[in-house]
Image (tube, rainbow, N blue to C red; front, side, top):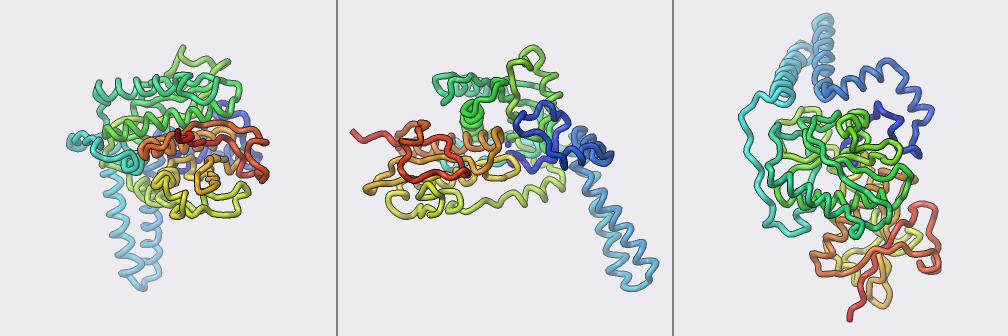
Length: 399
């Protein structure tokens, strides 16, 4: 979920006791988090000042370089004048970012336009994580749409697991990172006792809300490790029972702002990379044969592969793989697998894949169902330890 990617790679969480119990800190992580400079970093992160720090650090380094250049007395343009000009420009940009983003001193921004004219694939590709939101709240119409979709998609009959999940709405500036201006959220909650498919349901159900919100012009941001659970639990109040509930992730909703801190702009440019489709989809269960999506019968699924490829994931790690099995020139099933041992963020990412695959298939008029197959039903070829089989999409037999 930043979820980059959902989020850009988040660097930690001050509420480690609230992290998934199977993903506790390693000794190295514990050492880092005990250092004073790490605590300073976390304080800057949770007070929303960290995104402005890179500008200031670079300004100071340029001033030091200019000072050293003046002492050396050679190449004055390169070692003195140029660093001073760059430092001045970056400092002005820092002042601009703080004034416009943190304190909101800028002209009122327009509301986004609906993307209803786009097809399902274009809507899914249009969705990118928003790192800066307008200060205004969602309109009542948009808010009710989000809440209705959240309730509808989390109903037991629309989920894959018998374990209940739910989405709680919070209208408060939760402590999250790195998105700025966030005010309205859906908090994804699953049972405290771990149920793998319940976590998958969180990703699948919430992504369906996100897709429709994108269609209506709303901006969204999946937030996984970059959310302070203490802040979330405080605002949930009686709606959260620590003995029964577990927070999986949150998703921010609102209107995209054009005012974004420079550091976040630069990091966003590094997150546009994705693995090739052939590194994500395979034609055999041992993941030795990359899928040729242009060959029959695989090409019948068109852009379904693409929208899975561009699905958000925590740390932009893309921890999902799929095996598309065909026989007699017909697709028999698609097996979705987790490429890591993560029991939370990888499962949410896989659920997002399922939602995008499902939405793409519906757009193409292809009907199928999700089903967990026993080992003896998956054929003679063994699955490796990783990627690990989770669930299959089985096309409906033609009448």
